[in-house]
Amino acid sequence: MRSQKRLLGSTRAIICNNSIILKSKFIKLINLSKEAKFKEIFQANSKKIYHLCYSYTGDDETANDLMQETFMKVWQNLDKFRNQALISTWIYRIAVNTCLSYLRMEKRQAKDKLTETIIETKEEEISDKNEQVAALYKCIARLEENERIIITMVLDELPYHEIAEISGISEGNLRVKIHRIKQKLTQLYNRNERF
Image (tube, rainbow, N blue to C red):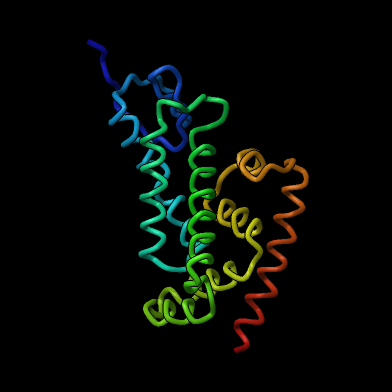
């Protein structure tokens, strides 16, 4: 019977031969069942994946649905993870693909996609305390698709090398792109504040 060690402050995990290596202050090798691995992976990544999904949809319920769908795919394919990247990178790629599939399906069914109407409806639900966050998400929603992906990962504090790997560009180009996205967001935000 294998002994299981407790997780201490885990943030990133890599699966390696039925074990998880957690990158934190202390690197631990943990032998866990698939269920326990999944639980740790979900706890470490669910908030970031929710934010990514929300940046695509602008809707809390849809973002939750897409997050759940992403983690269903993670569960179904956990045994197929090849350990060629961080598990968080792999999960982000699944989430991005899930969101893009959802948006394509929405377009095909001629339903509302992310529009000003949806954003305005969402803003009415948000309290005064969250007005700036709502304004930021409104500005993010107006960015191009790849810009939304990148800035969401930056806001989730992913390391640049991971963002570069997920987005498929070099780290140097990523830094330039992030700078330009921040400038664009600042302009959008300032224009939004005037109205």
